[in-house]
Structures are given as C-alpha cells and as structure tokens.
Image (cartoon, rainbow, N blue to C red):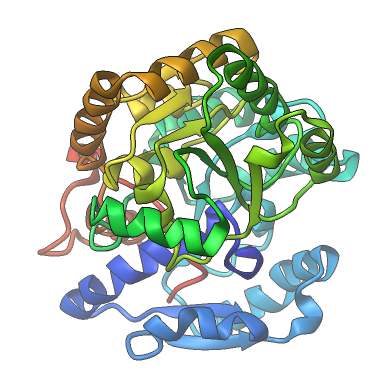
Length: 396
C-alpha cells in the first residue's frame, strides 16, 4: 500500500517502522515486514532490525494485491505462528482470521468526498470495507475525527478503537537554515522568489488545487506581487484537470508543478517556502501542515475533516471552497511579516505535540492488547497518550 513510497500511507509506514525498531529491540519483539520486491530499497533502514520478506511484483496490481492479502498472507501468518498481523490501510484488510489482527484506518474519504475514486473503489470503500473492519481485533484511527467516522459508518464498538495521532520525524523536520534552503530551491526548482508551497498528490477534486490556482490568480491581480506557487506531488486521479488549469492560467509562468519530491528534499522545500498552503477538502489527519510547522514555515490551512484537530490554533484557517477568502489569507501572510512570525512561532509549538516515538509506543501497546499479552514494562497505557500514528506492514 505504500505506492512506491509516494503516499501518506507510505510516510506512515516509514515513520512507524523507524520509531518501532529500537523499541522492539528493548522489549524483545520481532518484526516481519512484507514488501513488494521493487520497494525493498525503501526499507534499507530496517534491514538490520526486522525481517524483510519480499512479495513478488506480480502482486503489485490492485486486484492481484487484494488476492495476495486474502489468500497468501493468511497462510504465511498461520505457518509462521504470528502473534499479531497489522495491515496499515483499510483497502487491504483481511477477511480470514489467521491470528489476532490490527488495522490502521487513516480516513473514510469515500463517505465524504463524491468522486474521490472511481466507482469500483468507492463501492469497495463504502460496502466491502465495513464488513472487513468488523473482523479486526483492534483498529487504530489516526485522529479523533476518523474514530468518530469509524464508529458512525462501520458501527464498530469504540472499545476496539484506539486513536493514535501520526508523528513528525523531528530529526528531519526542523527550522534549519532558511537562506541556504532558498538558494537550493532557486537552483533546483527555479523558485527564485518568495513562494507558496502545497505538498499533496495532484488529485482532483479532493485536494482542491484548482481553487487554489484561482485564489492565487486573484492574489496576483490584487497585489501585483512577484510571489510564486509551487505544487509538490505526483500525479493522481484527476491530475489532468490540475495541469489544464495551470496551463490556462494567466499566472502560469509563476506556477511550478515539481512532481514527486524525494523525502530527503522535502524539509528544505518547507524551509524555503514563504508560506505553506493546504486547502484540502477532506483529510483523516494531514501530515504536511505539521511537517511544515516543524520546519518553521507559516501555514495556511483548511480545517476540513481532521485538519482542525491537527493544526489547532497554529494556522491561518480558510474555507477551501471560497477562493476569495483563500485569496485574502494569501494576501495577509504574504504582506505581513508580523503575521508570518506569529504563525511560525505557533506552528513550532504545535508540531512538538506529534512524535513518532510516542506513536510507536502506543501502537506496540495495541499489538499487545490484540494478542492478549500483559502490558510490557516499557509500554505506556495508550489511554493516557495523545500520540502520533502510522502503520507499517504486517508484523510478527
């Protein structure tokens, strides 16, 4: 489900695995990660602390992948006597029950965003997944908002739900040297003037790029500013509409579509940006605003879905369906150093609330509870944690 490392689920998996490896070493747990063959290099960091089990590339296509999860994986789990099996996305939850099972559900977007996916995926999310979710022993929700959705749409008892927020890798995402980052962004991406940054896959309509382009056009017309707008993310469903809107925009020379930005480059992109804009129509969590905050970048954000829960009072909040309102916030943040400094300071405080180390500790406790084990000496009670969350492939 990591889609070659280019999705939010991938960041969730990487963040949790990195933080869980040392903890499992302390508590004596062993991890097995099932990874598609071409994705194995992405897990080089885990090779010394976990068993990496290659999955043949023939199982990468969605239908084949579902078949593998429902047939091959249960047999492997039984043969290896796994204590717990964790699937990090609702799209691949198991119907067979080979051992205690934990699932992570990031959002229930099919219930909120029309045309988010094509009709087979919408049907799967709305009709099939609720049946699968009820067969899991424990479910991790990455936000209180998502937990409420699960209880509402899936009729899952709250005692089987644990809220564990996603984290921030603070040794990567920190303020750093903005001047050096701006010089790098100018050389690498042609962003040689102040710019607004949006990090999200190019997905229409859910990520709302087209309205942001409209708001940016109004901003440029109203201010005559030389600011640029940069989109960082790989093409997804509906990307053609976004590229068309860029090409037809009178501000096209000032709009950059950077494509997928490697993980190693992302912190400097946040540091270089004049402001981060996140006008998404719906999120089950929303990691990029918190990562931007951790890097000292002022944030303008929607509060839709779980975003209000995540950003708190540390961002300039906008109505994502109102380009005029969005334009007004672009103007305020671009022209007021006081506003930028206020958002920057508030964001740094907010970002410290999210940490993968807390997420790993809380997630490991969920594993232990699913397996019916006594609480580990070093594992905190998850009921006392407001953590961060991610989920990784299937573990033993």
